[in-house]
Length: 367
Image (cartoon, rainbow, N blue to C red; front, side):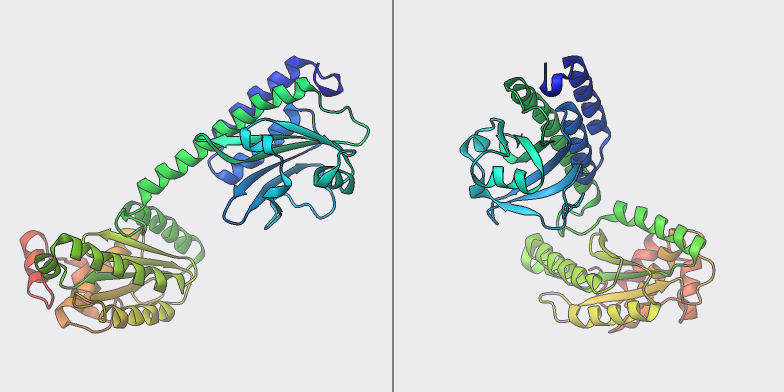
């Protein structure tokens, strides 16, 4: 029997339910919440927590507390952590261990302070390395954890570790799917998804949605003079500059559309704030070496641009405004809705070779 005379089949059923629940978890937060609740049930505890190792801080940081929490314990604590020297050697080797309120040292003291009678700690190994730990406790007066519980906990910990591994792999897959590999910014796929959501908010709630579209001038010349490695460095520096300016606007995504084209998607801030950010971006981009700055433009639902039924319409307006910026050799952004020529270009854009010729005639064309 497990502790408190719990039938083994109930414990096994709880582990199966835990594995199924972990398979549905999409984020690390969901995974650790499910892991703590499932492990608490499988090991017949009253409280459970999942913590992650932070070697650079020399700490073990608590991610979630589940069950009967003591005063001061939060479900998702902002910074509850403990020094690593408090944890015994077997934890590093992957062996579960137990302590009681009568145990000497910090573990017994912590149990007494929180009104608990005993705990069972399971190190979590992910990709063959120490990742963190699973902690399950019982109240005072409950049966102590037995050797059977300790052995069973190793299986529970393996299920939890598998769930964490799956979550990390999903996160990496999402990162690769939605991130530009050169600059680390969001890619076009990520921008399209966020823009579609933003336009839906605009149509339902009137939320202001704005785009800043930028083209890095002179990239071809930089590639010719310094090789593609030099061009990549210029793109990386421009991407970093774009990211810094995007961070100054709430709820703003910085993205690389492809090639030498970049974009900021801002949801909520006033159009004038976005234009001001674009102006500062243009000024600082002009100082990047090598290269010849960038052509920037903005399009916002807060400006007189007409209906915006889809994100494609807003992108078309921003694209047209950027072509106008190229044509004028503008030092600052061209703003859609404040220039009728931009609306005409958006409604009747150049196509095919005409589009390339249009860009080729402008200052910095071909880059």
